Image 1 (cartoon, rainbow, N blue to C red):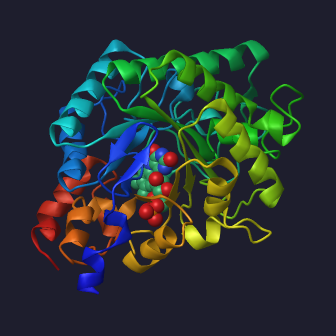
Image 2: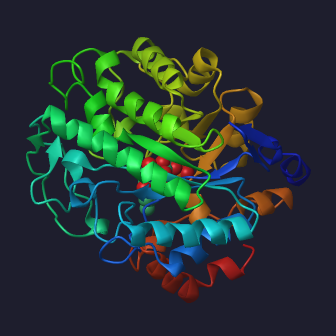
Length: 378
Ligand SMILES: Cc1cc2nc3c(=O)[nH]c(=O)nc-3n(C[C@H](O)[C@H](O)[C@H](O)COP(=O)(O)O)c2cc1C
């Protein structure tokens, strides 16, 4: 295994848009609830992200930042990107990552109906999300509220919020942004017929339901530099409905993938939370969504879900199912994952004990000091 690992296909260089990447390992976006109360990213976050660049990750996708005040905010201590102070905090992070030779894209995420912060959440339609608010993340708890539907004018404000945040991300020195249309958050609520009973232009057909995401991508593409990446994250599963699959299978997937490509996306990132890549990157009609996205768009595809496992990762890359691997939980205990694989070392095992002192960076640091996990090679 050791010599195989040193020739692992994830160690080959790659390219997204005009950005050259040293290898195929991408840090998956992970909310660490470590910003100040009013959403300003901290120097502690800059150190945290720099650690993944030092460890050799080809690209980092920083955790979802909210683009439009508390209405768009998901959790307590989530970072935002709608004020100068937010922008300056992200500039420190981009600079710390670049100093280590890394590349960094920032995810932009609007909570919509699943906000644990807004007094009255707003969403495509007045439909209560299933499940309970996420306990680890603070502020409100219990069942989600019934959201108020956005007016047509407010939908335009949402779009403007994403575009302004992308402009700020570029000013902060980020290499790009990732538009979050996944996991049951606002743009995915628009895409999901059970959450969106609106009429045209943003409800009805799948073309209409993906329209807002596409308009956001297209406007960002228009106002930002040509070498500034604009990616999109999609998923079948939702935090609120882990067993959700796209109703129209490959037929809908083709429309969605082609639409985001025409809007100007540089890459497609397909998330597979909880049940992993094989389960959630496959549609109900048996189509592997990652390779299908590559085939119908020609765009680079980032796959996600348990791809820290070297054999599965090698299969995904060598069988051309995807071009890049986004590593989530395992990266928390393997910030040096690419360097480890290059040295023939297996990844350290992730355990949910990492969150025993809370989901924040500080909580993890306390846990690391207690377990000394990262100072051993076991
Ligand atoms: C603590 C935590 C925070 C997360 N925050 C985000 C986020 O901000 N945006 C997002 O799109 N996904 C988020 N995710 C999902 C991950 O990006 C990823 O899809 C998931 O962990 C599955 O990948 P893995 O099997 O490599 O962990 C989060 C996951 C975890 C565990």
